[in-house]
Image 1 (cartoon, helix red, strand yellow):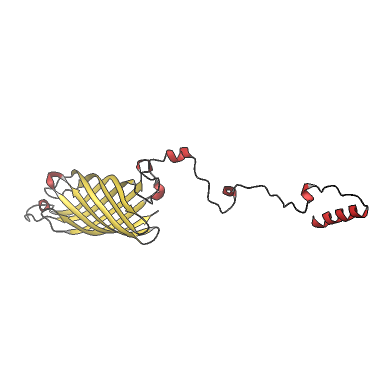
Image 2: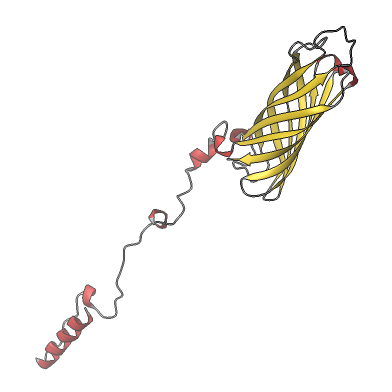
Amino acid sequence: MTCVAIAYWLAAFSLGQEAPPLPREMALDQPAIRPVQDPAQEEGYPPREPPAAARQNPSFIDLDWLEIDPGAGVAVFSSKYRTSPSLGLSLMAHAPLPWLSPENHPTGEYFGLFAAASFASIDRDLSRSVDHRRGMSSFYSAGLDYSVLRDSTWILVARAGALYAYYDGIADLHSGVGFTLGLTAGIQLSGKMGLTYNPDFLFGQSGSLIVMNTLGLLIQF
């Protein structure tokens, strides 16, 4: 384009005529003009932020941030059970509830929904004439939790919910409903895993209580 413009001016000069102005696209002092492209449409840029309406109507539960926490530890029983501490196993799942959270992402404080299953063996100190003195008890719970602290290093979550205790026919223990209170304190190992300590208080009928103390491996999806 530069060579064409120079030739044009030399031809006009040799004829002794004043050269008319060059077309805009051939002018030397005019930079090439490129159409402006929306950066959000170029490769490598993050997608546009969702519309305000979408942000104002979050989903009920966000399974994209599902977490599971398998654990093992010690189950300690109140005196009503007449049994010694035993091995306790637990499996807990958690997902945030965006519509109930002060922030619509899991980097701050937010409410969540949890479901858990816990297992512990019972060997009751009863007369040998009593059948079914020992067996495996299981506890199923669900409820709400709240992330008091959650960042790239620390995890602190409190929870409360309803409980169903199943004793599988162990002598003088009756299956039924109750409630649970628990806490998770942990440290992040990476963006997807963490180590946790989970004390859970399982309240059954007639003032019975089991404290499940487990260490867990938090897996974040």
